[in-house]
Amino acid sequence: MKAEPILAKLNELRHEAEDDKTDIEYLALHHAFCFVSYKTGEFQAYLDEIDAQQS
Image (spheres, rainbow, N blue to C red):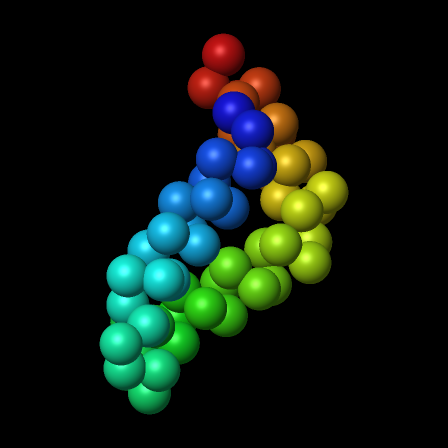
């Protein structure tokens, strides 16, 4: 599993919810996207670990 498609989906969902930037759904998606995008390498390592556990 790759981090990029997950980030792309988070970004898509974030844009769908941006009508009200004070709504908790938008804020959760926005901050999750920002945090994970800053930590992409660590997120990819996490996904690799999950994949290894499921194999």
